[in-house]
Length: 239
Image 1 (tube, helix red, strand yellow):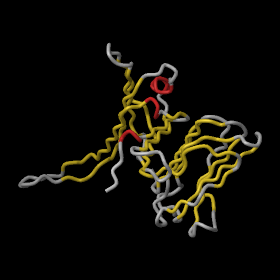
Image 2 (cartoon, rainbow, N blue to C red):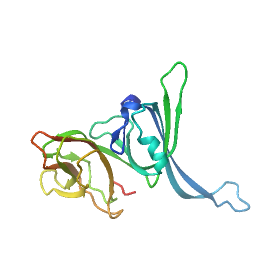
Image 3 (cartoon, one colour):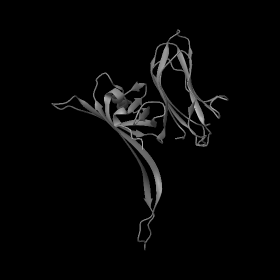
């Protein structure tokens, strides 16, 4: 078994990395059931209903971080990605189209001011992996990532851009059957020139993704040596 330590968790929300502020993250996914038990039964029977998911967080309050309080006021849906056990390429990621439903602050005499934050998934939570985390300087073609096999379950992708040094950036995910040739874009995000986030999903729940994927970041404008810092998560399932 390969256990993961909770201290290695990472969280991105919109265009911000919230990892430095958080101390706990708890996912809960549930499925409603409808009772179908008739008279004369000795065991209850049921059929599955709707699924839903929530995330609850706790952390240390920083007055400079205002996104969470603002989204309570705006009631906006925001791109959320949580990596429960690490932030390296290949680590597990949970892709949440989140609505903030709870925010609170707590002050006690012998501790730093804390906060609590709760979100509900506005659609299905996708279970995938992190495929990029860090800075690309100038136009960059990432390494081939072997994801074991092709799938035909659609896909979901989350992009969190936390810093742009200059220029405008086109970030795309490509796939290939061999990992060495035949690369073609399957997901292309809107060009980014500042902090932002975006969620993309495949057109169909049966869209095929080939075995190998990679990330390509292309800069337009700006100057040599300028880069973009971002996290990108990908799931081989459609919401």
